[in-house]
Length: 139
Image: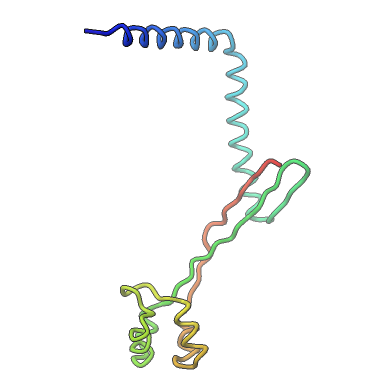
């Protein structure tokens, strides 16, 4: 059995839907233009992002476009394992987390203190450029 409160809620909901439908019918042309503008904006955003990745940051009085070029950086564990003494030092200093992550701060400190070979660490270090992130902001 429906209570009076539930009946009132359904009635209000029905009236709201009718009002929304009437608004959409009366403003169909404006809503279509708005939708077309949103599509155009999405297309232009993509074009600008591609352009910015090639040309870098740019701004004018209205818009600021910035490009962040992230990198993935890591140490190759297999290369480090080639030198058993370095491997044991890193294990003892807890620079190796799990078996794939290396704590860069600990390695830098050990290299600085000349406890491990700088050339081996340089050989094991790799970085890869990731897809640039482009930000478009309206001032």
